Length: 481
Image 1: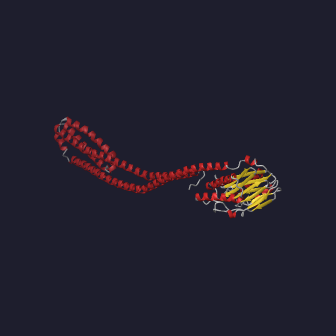
Image 2: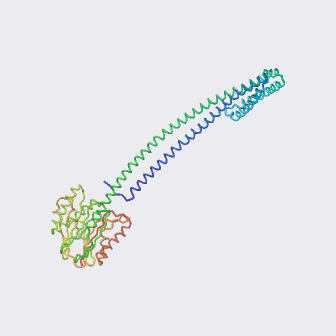
Image 3: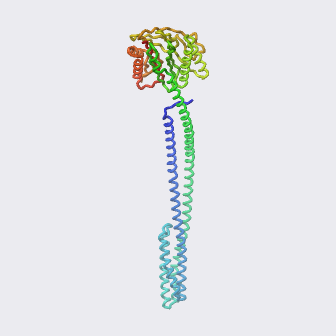
């Protein structure tokens, strides 16, 4: 069964669900980023640090190799110059001496990374001693004292300086290898911890994202249902609008009522929903006037359909000149009973019929109490409980039907209504009641039927105020001219 909602109901529900989904996704994105961004930053920092260390240590390894190579070049060049007095070797020495000074300077700039600054200082100091002795050998060679120059290379001071230089270079090389091993181990541990962290984060995030995905899929499914219901409600709203127009079209027109001689008639009907379950009609057949009022149980589409059945059946029986009240009501009952059985519905209705001719009203059928108003506003109430039986409950109601006669003089009249008036509530939950209705009628009876109708509806609306109306409201004023 489709339940109609206010026009913007589904839009509000859909917007609310969509807002919740967006909030969940935003939370998931922010939560995921808050976990992954630090992890990514750590990975990047590890990479940068490791890369810097590796680059520096490769440079140190290269510089260390250069220190060994250049030392050998200087030593060999100095010895060969002392042995041969060939200027080529002195020039070669001077060229590589400059390179060695440059390599030592570069080593000092990055050597702190491996805590070997003291070793490079020792190597530099030993190198200075070696350069000083080798410079003395060059001077002796130029003076022709090559033997003395060669003896300098075997001196205790020279040999000690070479030993100190070699020891310092070896220490640097060992520390480079040690530092590389330590860095590899440290970064291996960091990467392991990061991998464990990433695994833990994924263990948390995967179920959360699967849950978010499930919620999103549920939202899509619900959205499909909402769209389907919206389409169905749109279709139903169109059908109800058509039914409502049809129901209003079948109500007696004002010009029809004005055309009835000797009677001043005014009617009012306001359904609680799009389709009402109340019925009233005024039909004229030559000098006879048939007036009916009824109330189908409930309201809405089913009740409205039953109301249309009654209107059609009454008009059909009137057209066939059926004047016997018992036959008239029993035929109506049979029609409604068979139809509601076919509809598999539990709908039934109370119905009162008035046959007017020449100032005489014959009243039959069970409904609310009929209000008879005399010329000066005096009120008489006629109980209809013994004049009929609810239509649609039993297959045959012949034994329940009764009839009473009312004589109307000029200025007299009859008020017909449904319980939507007497049972209407004010904000305090108090009903309007039959007594108040009679007071308003009596007080305004000197007016025309239309003015009396307006006075009653105005008083009713004032009483109800802004309180919800739960039932259809129908009123019919019949006044003898």
